[in-house]
Length: 475
Image (cartoon, rainbow, N blue to C red; front, side, top):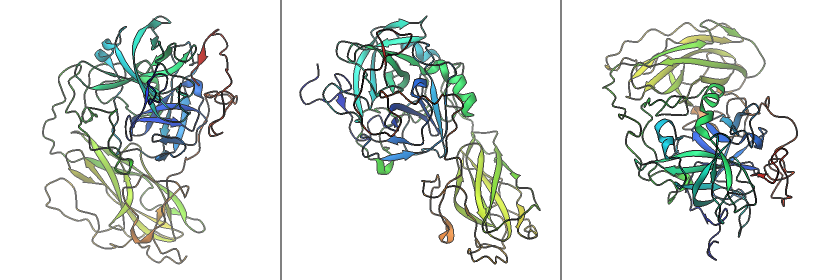
């Protein structure tokens, strides 16, 4: 039983500001885990119909709202299958919040009865309201379903309704933290629960998302550390930071050696290669008002890897259009005029490579290509494109729009830009703010009985799970 001043999941405590910052809330219905700047993992039985994901410590006052590009549930996955997997891919990456990596490969040897673990979620508590982030430290008690599911907690320390999809964390022998559990179902809250394990779903998640979510391993758990296999928070549950600065500032790990030799990169002096795949040079686009054009850039690097790709328009940096993750797509709205589009790729060693510009025309012919520029900067790339132009204005714009392209997509949501746009341009984000729901029926998320995401904090009615008599999903 918890102490009088403690507020728990069951038998736990509230989380300090910025404690376990990667634990998120699925629009008031389930919990989840941000495991990659663009990927949130949660439970298949929570459904996939989400337009918002909340970060913070209290869902009534979220610190941040994330927008999914799409969410998917594992086909046939759910409580009792050991494959209660689902994920959302975000429209924009979260780049300033420390993330705990997924337990993989040899690290899974730590999953034994008696191992101490920490459950985190926003669900019901034995002595507090729903929607507050809480943690409880308990132990692994065993396995079931052929080892595909793991049993955790009991004796008053447990997850409960609303914690479904949320994480379980463990400290591995190297002293680093990992996340491994997906809250799935159980009996009466406080008596222990059953959890799917993330590492069993990684191959499907990476294939469907098109993103590598394991920086130290491949999808099969083989040790394959890369440049990102470092910088993990040492004490993710302590908090003490603030959301305004991304909950960062705490101690982080060096290159991990949990399952083998740490990544030891050779000096990288080779610049990346950038190519604009779309639009094509000389292409013309017709339309009224601002005309949408998506710029697609291919960037490759033989050294440490790509850090980001940024655009130039008519030789000037187009601030706000920086993409840190593939695919490097930039949905823009162009006014009437002629534009030469450039792209600069920067690798993790700071080397830059510039794409050959493409020139397009909007409601007219494209301008002539800029004169090639020589450079002696020694880093394999030029220093910003054409010497002509320089201003984000079209050549001969006549629609009163100011002559500058703006970011395309739906206004009013937070974009992934690192700064404001030049020349007072409108802000916006790329399209695809809506969700696709090809894997889930229309019965709704039962993460809190009878409740759709965002319906408010309604009371629970004990909903039973067909085929699992005497057990309840941790909605």
